[in-house]
Image (cartoon, rainbow, N blue to C red; front, top):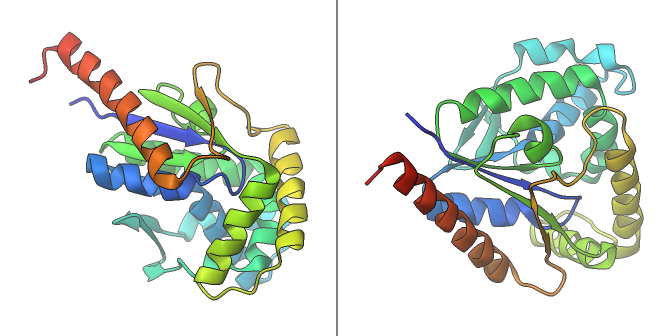
Length: 227
């Protein structure tokens, strides 16, 4: 059976997760928030008080269970949605995500899910590493100022203390780490569609991607004789 995949990449605060959730619901696909998986790993590492700068500190991932239910990440059976959105996690997740053992383990899980269901997946290296054969690849971005504003409003809406100027500096720092790391850096896949969302609202972005994806899927279904 053929399973379809929509890959959305982009820097922190571009709106990837929000749009991906909307598209997954609209398409009736499984939504995989890979950023949440790296956040969850960071949260658990901090909780265990391991040295997050040491790539060998993450052996606990072998005994860690991560599953998505209706787009919500459960780690070891617990909903960690709020716990992984703290400033402490945000300030350390790029360090954790730069480690090869961490990336290899989480990519393995992500690819395994894509082999058993239709997925909408977002992150930093989905189109380039995780799902190189995705049916549609989108590279979403926005200005640093707009991304900081969105993250600031998101934090306030869920009761997390937030400072716009600090967020802007943190996003710039994360952009540098994510795009300059040697292993699986953040970059636009050659066959990805570039989408600047600075002047678009979430619904407009979702509509654009949905229409593009439907055109591709309809063509593939016709080619394969699917009704």
